[in-house]
Each structure stands twice: as C-alpha cells, then as structure tokens.
Length: 74
Image (cartoon, rainbow, N blue to C red; front, top):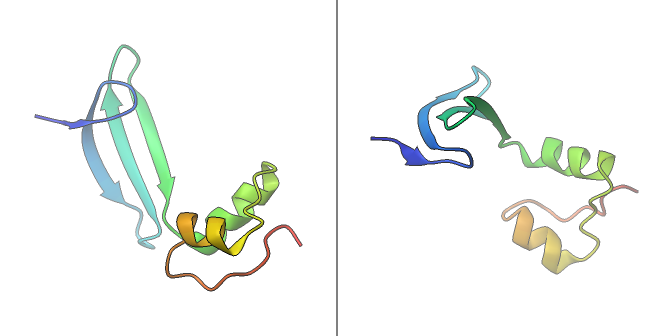
C-alpha cells in the first residue's frame, strides 16, 4: 500500500541526513524520485531564483508559517 503521489503511488520516503530534505519514490507509468526541500529559508531563496516572490506578509505566512517575514528577492 502506497501513499498517493504526483505520478502513481508514493512507495518510499526518507530524509536526507541533515533533516531538511525529504525524498520520495513514486511508481507510476514512469518511476520518479521526488525531492521536497523542507528548509523555509532555502525554499524562499529557490522561489526567488524562479521568479516566484511572496511580496505580502499574508502570502509569506501562508507559504512559510512560523518563519519571520523577510521581504524575499530584495
């Protein structure tokens, strides 16, 4: 029994040793490895690299709960 993933069933989960990244393997039509960054500081930096800025305190709180608001991409 697997968890529902983006492409087929999510069959395995593991954390990287630093505890900030979760790795998942899904077995759909095309087996896929998923990598979820759980570090909010790093995720905010990545969002800026891709042009996805959360310009308001409300959006920041929605996507990064518990993190102190810092204007991203400044």
